[in-house]
Length: 213
Image 1 (spheres, rainbow, N blue to C red):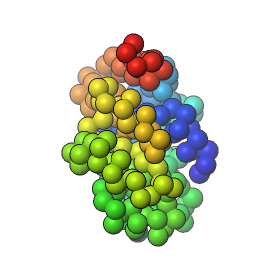
Image 2 (cartoon, rainbow, N blue to C red; image 1 turned 90 degrees about the horizontal axis):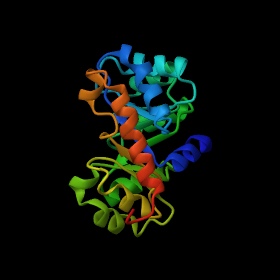
Image 3 (cartoon, helix red, strand yellow; image 1 turned 135 degrees about the vertical axis):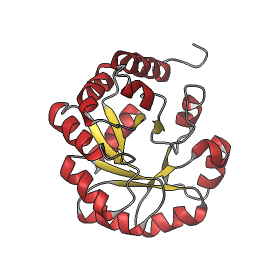
Image 4 (tube, rainbow, N blue to C red; image 1 turned 135 degrees about the horizontal axis):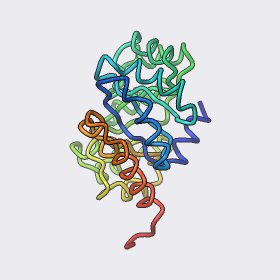
């Protein structure tokens, strides 16, 4: 589990992906790797998710693949069988957390309030998804809600963009950010994998540049 978290801290950005056709998965995974960001959160918002993870895991082994929008223990089982290395959920569901623990998968559940953070702490979880980040109040809200919980780290997702991602990542409590702008659903459907590669390259370059550049 620490190895997964280490990679998330290293790469700092997690493309949040919706795949309608598993046939697109390998080209998509290769585009992310070619762009310099070998990480993907494939959301269980479509019936193709598990098969997409399976294909990416088999054919793009350098890619760290997570399963997102995991809502049930059954989906945890599907994600693990497909080859996912971690699980992300939009909210805090104790049954999903327990299923991940039983199956040896790191889980980063979504939280939005101090009550939910404390529920996660009761499960000995200290790295949590902050969702939906911008709708909740953005970085200002995250700083306020994180203040009493010095040992907790966050992965903001929801409304993160090239315009605000560096501000989020400058906050020490942030491990990484989830971003759907890196590989939009429409681009995947239109098989614009070179465009996705270039968007990822720009994001990686943005994070490596100094403020004002």
